[in-house]
Image (cartoon, rainbow, N blue to C red; front, side, top):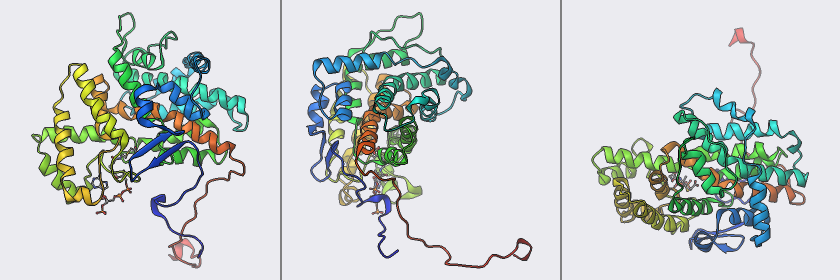
Amino acid sequence: TGLVTLDGGFGNTAAYKSAITFLDGEKGILRYRGYPIEQLAERGSFLETAYLLINGELPTVDQLSGFRDDITQHTLLHEDVKRFYDGFPRDAHPMAMLSSVVSALSTFYQDSHNPFDEKQVHLSTIRLLAKLPTIAAYAYKKAIGHPFVYPRNDLGYVENFLRMTFAVPAEEYEINPVVVSALDKLLILHADHEQNCSTSTVRLVGSSQANLFASISAGISALWGPLHGGANQAVLEMLESIQAQGGDVDSFVNKVKNKEDGVKLMGFGHRVYKSFDPRAKIIKAAAHDVLSALGKSDELLDIALKLEERALSDDYFTERKLYPNVDFYTGLIYRAMGFPTTMFTVLFALGRLPGWIAHWTEMIREPGSRIGRPRQIYTGVEIRDYVPVEER
Ligand code: CMC
């Protein structure tokens, strides 16, 4: 195996060429298809960002309205899909429900299995974008024991999701525009991040020519872990535990520095960003804005601010170039919006979906694309002879 080099965690291995997202970790730059993330978050919408990532260009007015119409026609889940939720225990984690139900979609759309059938891939793309908010909202309803709220197709993408999540049948539900625009912005900021763990998973599964639903379901599973998308839930749990200890930020930071029980400062650090995470900058400002617009104060925000300040003035963090990442402040916003902690990573998944689809599609269309198959350096016993069980 002389030709094989070991690169744990793929820290220095590029497996693909990609024209989707540019990321400069030293300078803190993130661009989707050349557009700075700041401009898209400030002036764009999630649906046009999704269109951009998947198709390569921002849509015209007509293209966007066609895209939106296509999506709204597919928001319903088949009534049989709904029955999956009956089988889950009510304390099931919504991420587990999300990946299971997405995987199950490939049993309902069996004509979607050929990754080279462009018409079917387009239809699967629309179905996924349309149905993931419904699947996510149903997971929440299942957890709280409320009846499902069906999608309403006169509403926008985010409005519809919020209504399916928070409305109760037969009661008025008023959609708060502050929440809509903040969530839309957060979805944009999560929409792609080049070859992260979940996206690489989607590509790896897709490289075997598994269908889009199966590949996305695997991506959702990869996202769930606390070192990846699950960090937003872990950050809030960390803040709550610091609060329960009387808000003692110093002793928590010391625990992290001493690596006691493997405790990490969740929401800090990034494989690629070594100066700052441009998404975190926008989200920190949004956390202030949303909380004050909703008239909510949150002691956890004060703890987070103190924790950030404390960490950024400590050699442990500066020497290792650990800065707040996208997950550090998002949970506080989601909490102010009324989402329970277990739904946070689901919101990340809703945002990341167009990125996953864009990467899967780019890979499938790449001429000469090969199955993903990393090598290894074998460290086991070289050779030995079989001994019958009674002689061992
Ligand atoms: N708290 C304390 N120490 C840390 C942290 C942290 N959050 N992150 C890294 N370190 C230390 C790590 O222990 C190592 O120290 P040493 O050199 O003494 O062994 C050094 O910094 C280098 O870290 P690493 O583990 O080699 O870094 P990595 O690139 O493999 O991991 C990471 C990146 C994001 C998984 C890691 O920083 C981490 O676990 N952060 C906390 C979880 C988190 O916030 N994840 C969200 C990432 S951003 C969004 C997303 O991808 O979903």
